[in-house]
Image 1: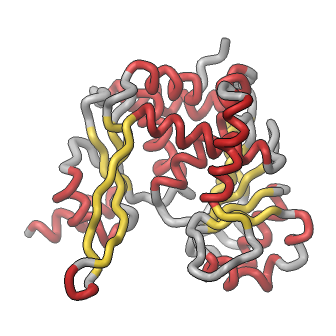
Image 2: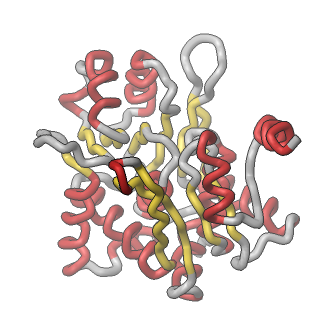
Length: 289
């Protein structure tokens, strides 16, 4: 049987069901109506339940092996959980940079043949809606954040609820789908940024995903006792490697959610590992000085 990232994810959850898998921040209204940080965590057992319910919800909504699911969102817990859910079904994750122009978003959706489009919030969707209007009849849109006013769009909460209902009759739905994965199956199509002309889609198989993780992390001595602070965009392959390494090795992944919040993340998460591009370390060094 092919040992993909997702096979390891289930094994990690079985080995460490009570260990902290993820830590993430949710904004609360504090005294004087000022926002305050509320840091939450999920164990590997709880995280597995979240991923499985999202996978079941996606399958209920028509996502099948080989289907393309595009994600346009900032770095957050839901992005990572959705990626594992999509890959576990044998579907293909198509990440889109939040900074992409509406025209590039439309191109990526059409070029990748995505039929499910997950968008962070309603404001983002409304900004790009005119550019993708011609594609909407054939694409299902799902909002990560539930709007304060009623919306005709599906939300992640509703997706999760439908998944939980499906799991009552098929509790091993995602594990069964994962067993059908082959290392040659496409895992993700990553579209380049900063190039001339339209973005170019780069295909990554499950073989490449597990290779990147199994070769890089052991070299650095990373173990399940480590903690990372993640803030890189998941539309970039380095950010995705952090998700996949977390699933395979079992380290705790803390979410700074943006580069602007690295300082708060350091104080709350106290990471033992930081995965970043050189420019980030240069900025940290300059800040310390």
